[in-house]
Length: 147
Image (cartoon, rainbow, N blue to C red; front, top):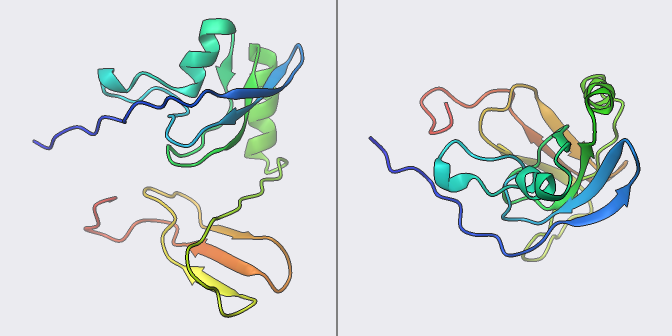
């Protein structure tokens, strides 16, 4: 049996960027889970912290543990359903930025490496024509640690 992964404590606080009667826009810091993990010691998350102040807060989507960014959080069941529908229909535009180390010699290109484990859909991100793109395979390779 493998040793469970325990997320290190995240001392950074989420920042509420926008609030109305239907939703919150919240800046999730890197190192904080979006939702509680399976292990009892991985309960700290953006949604549990928000529910301490907004008990009705509901998850709409997630960001990876090491990803910081703006998350949409519903404040009631109707807004959660409507927001889920928008995400499912790809009506929500997403923009990702990566911080790279070193010198990039070319003005454009493609990084064709896996972006994460268990991806059900192919994913490609780009910031515009003639830009760098990142792609991923739709599923992890058989026998990989992600499979």
